[in-house]
Image 1 (cartoon, rainbow, N blue to C red):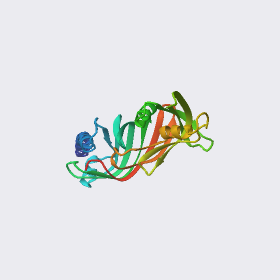
Image 2: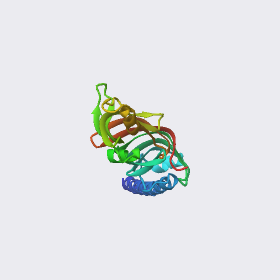
Image 3: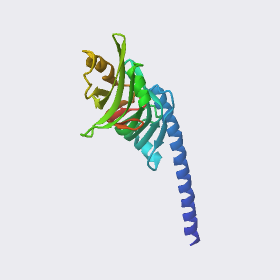
Image 4: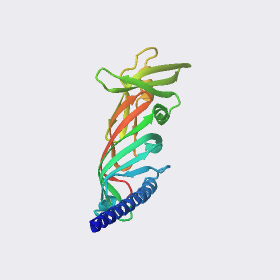
Length: 235
């Protein structure tokens, strides 16, 4: 009986040591991965990386991590010839192929979300006479924003606020299109206003392999659903 007790105690101690070593390895790997993502993606801030699953060392031995979560707040992405601030970037990556030094990481599949505030979306228009705000949804359930544009015509300032539908096109572009512009006043005003408030903004500063799936408007901004395959995080 004494021998059995000693064996059980030794097994418990060894198990605890293994768990401790496994957790230390995870923390080290998360720090290395976060720094590599920051440098490879030219990010201004360092993301939070969380490696899921246990034991971690077994996953490393197989060169594949079951699931990795990456969070980043306040990444600046390119939007054509302008930049746009994306907040609340949160991605879950599955089947992440790695090498022993974590200098390469490619995920088989990715899902996630990101957020753009109306203030940041307004700045992305590049026009001080255009503002973007919450517009709710139309009868068909499509997300809308309220876009206000000002133009100067024949010595007068003309302002129009319209509801515009916001969608994702091509997997990388946010499109804003006015549903209808009241045809009042001077001839040609509708076209001039539309030139200001209809716009596309291509988002191409996110990790390679991530695409924009759909967009939903909220009271404080635009929520974007992200998807991806063969996402290169640290290559």
